[in-house]
Amino acid sequence: MTADPEDIISVGDRLLRQHPDSFSNEFSTNKRVVTDVTDVGSTRLRNRIAGYITRQKVEV
Image 1 (cartoon, rainbow, N blue to C red):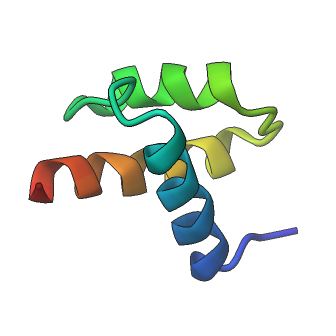
Image 2 (spheres, rainbow, N blue to C red):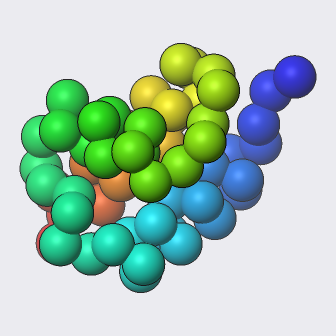
């Protein structure tokens, strides 16, 4: 099962609102944080969420 891009954006935005200081501009750091604060079982899904969050943090 794949996740729609809208789902990735929704989860990423929610995590950024709930844990704004936990995330950084580093993808590897964000992967660990996503693993810690969610129960995402799929590595690919975790990486997509962490990548979205990293892009959002770099833009700001």
